[in-house]
Length: 196
Length: 219
Image (cartoon, rainbow over all chains, first blue to last red; front, side, top):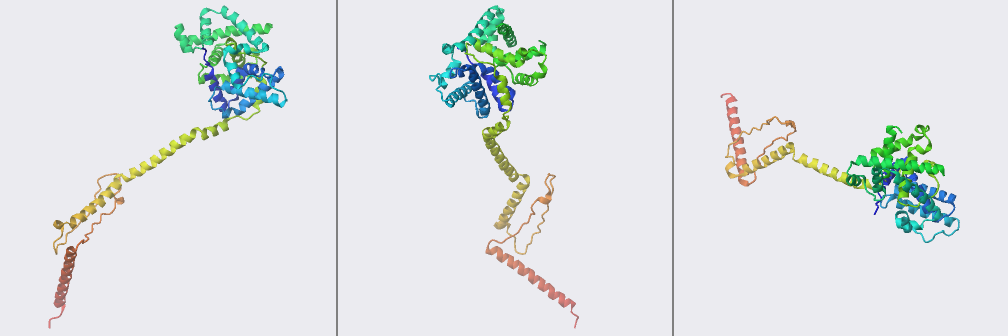
């Protein structure tokens, strides 16, 4: 099963924000904005409202960050805030939540468990599916050593050290191969989105 | 892409995987700080923050994570810029949480240090000398009280106490004066002292009488 190896990065960034570095929070926003909007979109249908509520959730998270002790993972904590913000938004508008069957725990599973993908709304899955199609096509075009390094990282959740042991090359080479593979995919994604 | 820019982008890739060092993160954040000036010549797609965003997007899409919405990072960043930074409150938190234990340790160390210094002072050569002097006084008085060391009547020993500097670092002037007293502890010693005093008085009176006789003109 894939591990969440981006947690050390979240921890590093959270510590930076707590020490007063707002740029670190910008990186967290860039990382989680689409995931969070997908969660909020389960409660609110209007895309502008989704953006506003997600922004409000991020600001609430920023204000509450000094209280974040790291007992739970950062994204779990962030999603909890997002769901509460979305529910409060609906209550303030005197509307019932669109999907009352989703609770905080469900949302956390929704965010982390690959088995719950089919629960995503068609609008959500369109962006994901489009991206996934481009990435799948681009992966096949990658040189084998780059593809192996990236897939071991992304699908197996292996660390650089483990990948270096599997591929029989230094960690620095693994790091470089993953970077080059990402650059290749990034160019393909960019050109595809620019065309569309 | 020049070499330094490529190295920095490689660090961003490592950061996505949680494999970047603190130094690399520091460099990335520093670069983001001046991104406007540096990347004005580049298209917005090539900025470091956009690379970070797309690398994460690719990673999340590969994990089939549901993604949706539009880019709200700029508006969130502007809203956060209006908020106060967390530095002071974090320091407060550190003082409240972490330093509680550290304060306890520091207090314990301080107490140990005070007790240690006191112990050191008590065991210092100066104090030892004082104790030794007191002990020697006590021993001397005990020895004097023993029958073998009692002075015979009429015998007055010449006691000469002299302070000798052994070349130590402590000043002799700080040493407590050595005063040895003979204190009679029983009746026999007292009577011996009385007799001795009486003898001395008698001797003086006889000598005075003789003097008076000598000085007196012969009749």
